[in-house]
Image (cartoon, rainbow, N blue to C red; front, side, top):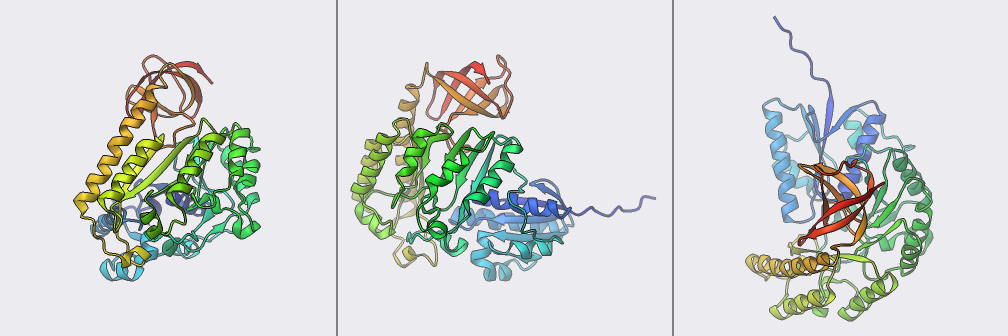
Length: 436
């Protein structure tokens, strides 16, 4: 007769949403490991922590569905406990407790010590950068600030993440050094708004100084900037980008719209003229810069004329990278007081039209790369291809470089110089010139 063996307490952390959530899950896992806990990421475990997203409708739906899925597993005995944390939990805790009461406990975005306590672990203040990274070994996200002070009408992030709070330069450098010691070669700097960095701590926009400190970290070869805000952009960052080869000629700067009427209603603090001038300054200062932006269509009051203006501007600006979202009407935001008057099917059609234009622009820009050589980092192998990226591409959202694995052997996490031999809308095909 077999006796039932007791399940070992293995904690499975499930991450939903953006790179900021990825980072938070990694910090949570680092804390759990430091307390001697057995922790895994999106694998089997009898204790589950779901790090949720509460940003827009699709993300909220995915978070709720994931919670329900694990509640079913709990009911049939496949898991013992389910804890929920993150933005959805921060924003809707009373509703969630009422609708899905069987969750063991809900925690907000600032309640890491409480969550650790519930998991039988202690919060260790002395841990700086002791994360269990979940990204491929060659790159890692590095969060330099939390929260946001911007008043954008459509955005619920300040509700979920609070006011802007910069992390001191010396702490970020320590974290970067630890990541580099573990083989990380690319740091992707993230925050709700990189350009605000330092205003609270140093009484000035201090992103350039932070970059100067990070380029000195040995082992790091690429530093990438994500999520800059157009209003008050610190132009000294461009000087550092030009001067320091480690800083990728790449900037992710969500612009959201271009019509003055819509920008004003969105409370973006800028105009079409100022935005267009800023992009010109970027391209003048760093001619090789790749600019990624994101746009919102279907915002309340967006007329056909506003949309046509946006379309024409996208054609004129020829952004190297662009994503487009349909407006999501979020309660407790300033725009929630406006009528969500653009029908859903019109929103979707407008987003599709923007992405069609962008697809053509991307194809044309990619054709110009044929015959040229680029330094790429190899992220992974898929089927018969090694998949790499240039400095002009961020993981998961941008172009990828495919190299025939039947002809060349490459190591994931390593760099190589490649020549582009073929190009599609968003993918490039290359052959190796030299492996690093």
